[in-house]
View (cartoon, rainbow, N blue to C red):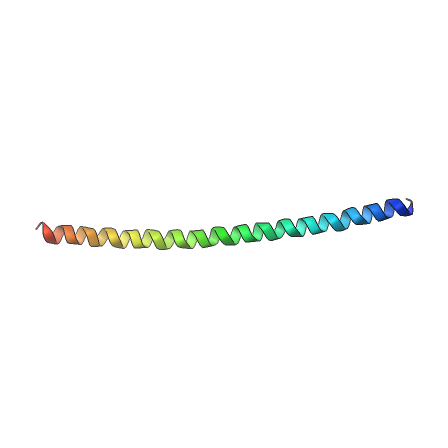
Length: 64
């Protein structure tokens, strides 16, 4: 290998690693966003269940 080929191979390696690090960061960010959405979905469903129970209790109380 010539010096030029060694430099190109090293450059490809460095650029490839940097690209993989950026992709890894994007994946971790995406996973964090998805986890946050899952927490919000759980809270929303719990709130909806409580609201449904309250509506059912109110309906039962009004129409005994």
